[in-house]
Length: 117
Length: 113
Image (cartoon, rainbow over all chains, first blue to last red; front, side, top):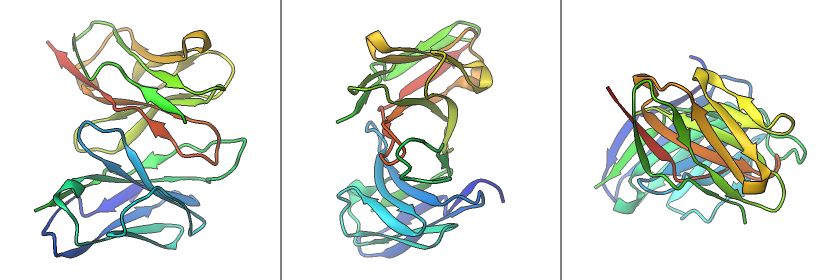
């Protein structure tokens, strides 16, 4: 596998279910990201992890719980979601995050299409 | 706060025609600027980026973009569109390495024969 992979690619869940989204990057990067992409809205950054520490949390409801056990893996644990949480969830990685005078390109995975019934 | 405006939600062009997708940003200083493309069912792929220097930047797949400070714009262009260019295009800006990317809402490109 190369680049950034995400599993599953599609997920349908009820509002009372608990599920997890998985992201893995094979690029040796230190930073990983979760984004939410809803129809007719800009991509919304949810979480950023740098060296396995959470550095950004953009007012995301607690029903979304991220986990970064190591620099290659990122999870998004889901529980008691709402229908409005249905969206494409994109994972990305970059070499670093938090270097004030440089910027590292983000590489995106294909996303998980989540439908909440 | 930074913001990105892509005024065109959907554009349709004929194959072989030229293309220009508009992007305007709101920020006091010159940010880092990006164009991404998203094909159906895929993640985002970086087309090109502008950090400094020459204001006309070349990207992959024959795309280019021009940074115009006076207009706070970073428009994407391609001289001759191919059917495979049909996708969603996103403009994005970032101030520095310790601030997140801010994306526009995207422009969907349709290509007709």
